[in-house]
Image 1: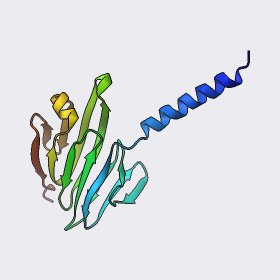
Image 2: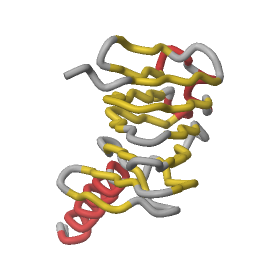
Image 3: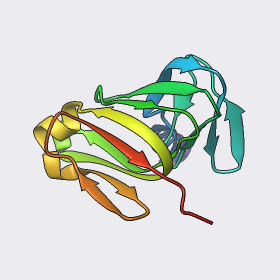
Image 4: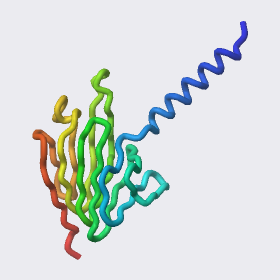
Amino acid sequence: MNIRPVAMCLLLAAALSAWADDAPIGYVKTLTGTASITTGKNKVTAQLGTPLFQGSTLKTGAKSSMGVTFKDDTVMSFGSDTELTVDEYLYAPSQGKLKLGSSMAKGSMNYVSGVIAKLQPDAVSVKTPTGTIGVRGTQFVVKVDEPAK
C-alpha cells in the first residue's frame, strides 16, 4: 500500500480546515475619514473591501465613519472614535451554528440584523463596559461614552 496519497489527502484536509478558519467574515462597505482594522498583530488602514476576521478590532478616527457587512448580511455602521471587537462569529446555518458576539469599548454604532439574528436572536450580543445588549429586534443604536477621568 502506498501511503503517499493518503498523507497528501490528510495534509490537504488540514490545510483546507485551517483556511476555512481564516476566511473573512465580512468586509468594509463604506468609509469616510480614517479607520483601522487590527487582527492579531496585523493592523491595516481600512479601505473599501478590507476583510474582517473573527477577533478583528475595528476603530474609527475623529470625524470618521465606517460601515461593515458580515457574511450573514448583518450591517454595522460606526460613528467617529468608535472601537469594536468581533469576539465570536459563526455562520453555518445548515449545521445550526450561528453566533455573533462583539465587544464595544467606545463610540457609536447602528446595528441592522442579518440572518443570524433572524434565525436565532439569542445568538447575537454586544458587550459594553456597563452591560450586554441582547439582540431581539432588527435594528438598534448604541452609544458608549468613555469613562470620566
